[in-house]
Amino acid sequence: MNDESSGHGRFITLEGPEGSGKTTAARHLARWVRDRGIATVLTQEPGGTPLGEEIRRIVLHMRGMSDDLDPRADALLYAAARAQHVARVIRPALERGEWVVCARYLDSSLAYQGAGYGNDPDEMRRLQAFATYGRRPDLTLLLDLPVAVGLERTRRRAEWNRFEDTETAAFFERVRSAYLALAAAEPDRFEIVDASGSVEEADLAIRAIIEPTLASWS
Ligand code: TYD
Image (cartoon, rainbow, N blue to C red; front, side, top):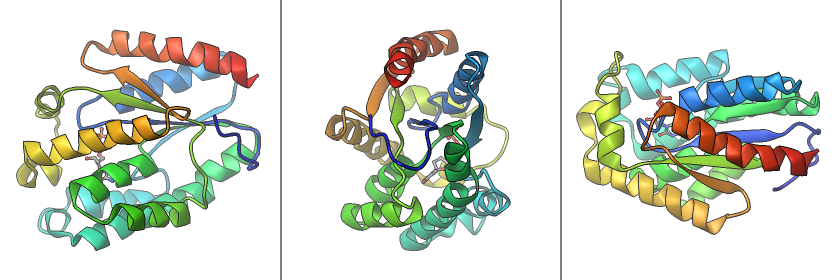
């Protein structure tokens, strides 16, 4: 795992396609780490700061705007939310020695704005390095599942999201493949979790990963 100099806290991200259960898994993971006596910040992207929450509304929930974003404008909005999040929430917490559990981070932009919307992968990487001040996660859990299973789960969501009207299964297949390629390229940072079963099964798989990691970090 990469142990960067910005404090002693550990930075864990959860990634995955639509409906993979990142939000629930992140909540359970944060609670579990806290139960071990470790101060832990639970957060998500896009969001996590007042600016991030405003950007979240713009990129996801405003009909007529969210579904008509130029791919570069889209990438820059996510990047702006991320920079604010790193500067105001993630980095300060890590510097205090706390842990940060974050649902979605830079890999989401590589997968969605890069592979999904066709922005150049190298430009996306440079943009992420800029937006994150170079802070990469110590561990990334990739919650993987077949696209059709994930989309079926998200149909039950209450709030309109731009993807519902505009994106096809092919788009989400590109996102999933990109995630798997990212995991293959950085096996030290990524762990793949089978997210096609129940919440309990995913939680068990995550704990099985975190136990030895926790031991190796202490
Ligand atoms: P969210 O409601 O958090 O859904 P999920 O439970 O799937 O995480 O919505 C986040 C959406 O934003 C999701 O569809 C992916 C997208 N997204 C990007 O396209 N790029 C990014 O960098 C991030 C953080 C999210």
